[in-house]
Image 1 (cartoon, rainbow, N blue to C red):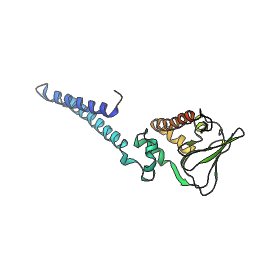
Image 2: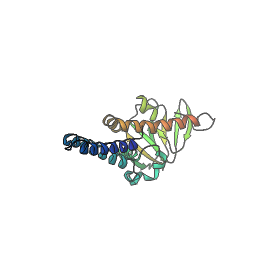
Image 3: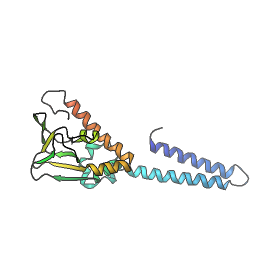
Image 4: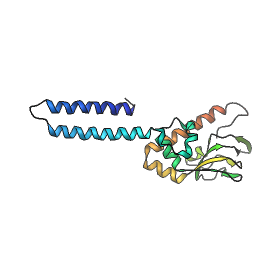
Length: 201
């Protein structure tokens, strides 16, 4: 069983029956077994509450609630952790997000607006709703292209150092981040097959 909520409910139910058995199976209640089962049951109840809280949309930061539908494949708790590390703002002027071949120090998501990309001598425009610098971030290499954000575009920017530190502290966060990036990369590959469409980076 991979559904964590159902699994914990099943364990808690089983713990209840264990306690009932230990209380009635012998002439005197088996207190040591009852105490141990109660402690295990309490731990699972706490774990269930934390799990339900992490899956509740109530934990989504208000400043990012409007874009959660774009990341609905992520549990609200993982989305919250990811967004808390980011900085959301509107570019007051054209902004260079990365230089081809240069080290990448941040990951960017375009919320609204667009950006221009220059890669291997070719120029093309990319729309909103995608990550910038995700390939370089995952592979730990230089930027695959030079990307310039258009003035007035809105983005979320994450420091690579902050993301790396959070990934080390929490394997779950690392999986959530990689899942978000992987879906973005899959979308780019799907759109890249048609001439004139957005190309994969």
